[in-house]
Image (cartoon, rainbow, N blue to C red):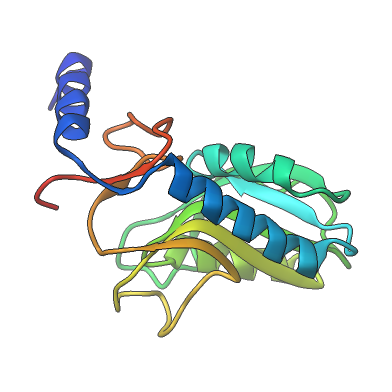
Length: 188
């Protein structure tokens, strides 16, 4: 088991060797495009916007100020039990607390990789009575291992190759969520 100091040193090395897939300017352009699309679709809907912790925190912090319409913001924290499940069993660390009946809900998360957790969150919110549940991610990882064929978020900032990525909310061993760009781990 690695110590905290070993993880820190590994994280420093990882960033030094990483490939930059999208720099801060690319991310800002993607955020501007996302904000425009979300505003066009939800600007008159009084949406409830949930950020998925911890990954969605940086994305939400950068996106929300670009949404120039009234909305409510909350957060949730959930992870899926194990990798073999069909995505319906969530480990809720923080459940949604607002009344969802009749609401349009937008989920913000950092990345759509396989999508099992996102799918389970969307299904849960719909069962709780939301009229419409949409998703927005900064990064869509391009591969065929999605929870369902052709799965995509309703709003996507950037498509990236199928590599281990970090930055803009995504972490490497708990580090670099704060990196302003999106980086791929060398050799992965």
